[in-house]
Image (cartoon, rainbow, N blue to C red; front, side, top):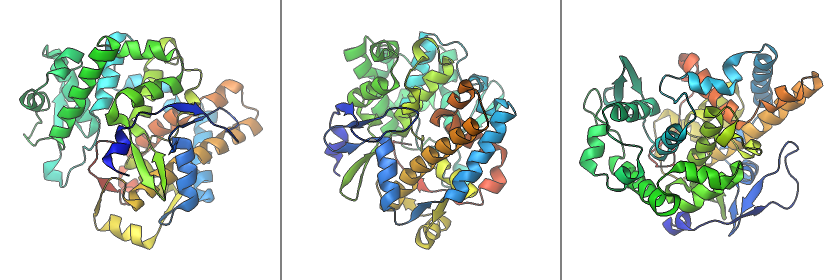
Length: 372
């Protein structure tokens, strides 16, 4: 697939055929598979990554245990508990969510010495949280880094100042980050009166429509990959926007998406690692050799696509398994509805943070990309 394929606008239409039992889903026109279809298709044809039922069951059992014990690890309110995330779901918070997602990609470092950290209110953050800390620091200094007009005219020098790290090491893909931020500012001004809130109003409570609006209007979110003569949509960052709005709003107001279950796994580099740790994914010797030797994949490399696509499908199977177990256990409808891709994504990230040494025995895949 050439670069032009990522620039094509999409028109989404209802899927014809079998659907997930707990929600409907869609596919995109002009031969682009939806994330759900992409996960299923890639898992069916994958050469280097296999989804393992025993590992899927293991993850599902852990999730069910947390649900039955009433643990808040799977509660959407947990999102607000992070010190960097907005606490009040107002227009400023929703703008913050969108802009933070626009530039949220590729923060991994080649060596520990080149790790980018940002200190905010006495605490040091790295990875994506360093990016969020830098946004909050800029806003506190009166720099309108989430404002569409400011972003439209943003210069490289201004962005470098905003993203100044503790050690002076520059964040990766700075020019690409500048480009997507300027694009976001321009499109918001030209089509949505400068406000992401206008995008949400147009979405009218539909996660599917919100995904459509973002992908159609903001090209940097078109996370597609060519795989075995199909064009597959992975869509980590755009789905993260929907998940974060839903979490910030507590499923109410502008986050009251009636079709939140349309979301699939929000797959980056860490989700496959956690799934492999649980045994839900099995790697081929060739892939494992690449990972252990630190090979940096190109975006749309076969092995990279299989890692992400099979992770999407593994998440779908985990959700299905969890819901079946909860229903058999006479759970209330509210308890079964708590399990979706947004909740599981937070669970995977938190699990990896809490069990970092153990999980990191599984090598993580690396790629320089604006998509995650």
